[in-house]
Image 1 (cartoon, rainbow, N blue to C red):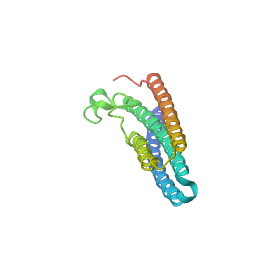
Image 2: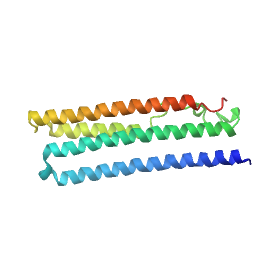
Image 3: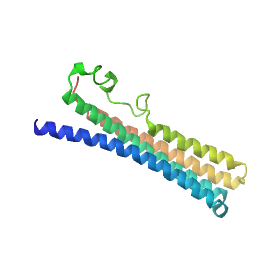
Image 4: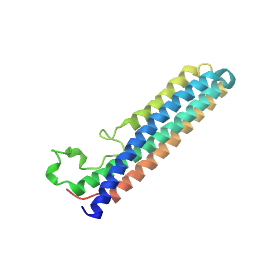
Length: 181
């Protein structure tokens, strides 16, 4: 085995390790999210509805950003793995050993790339909406405006960051097409 082949195999294995680490971090984030909810509920009398919602919406926004970032790294590593496989496999291996759909890189948003990351992204968003709607009728007009501005800011920041990540991934895809099979 050549040094190049050893390097590619080592890199291939590290990409799979990165995917496993990213998956672990997503579940750790979910556990922290549950802990934040429990802690905020425990301190609810001291921080009030607006404090509770402010903490919860802000953390949800952060969780959504981290989830989008994990999704980008997942796709990046899957794309690199696809390139490495093209170095070692022959065209007839596709459809026999490796599914044909794995020949091409995944899109940032798409049916085949709809992994746990995007599911959790939408879960964090929906949980925030449900918690906010549960308390919304108890808020004064000023508190509603404050919460609406915070929620709107979180959505805008996530949209901007999501489009930024999509652009980075699209550049990555075009700059590293891999061997043609």
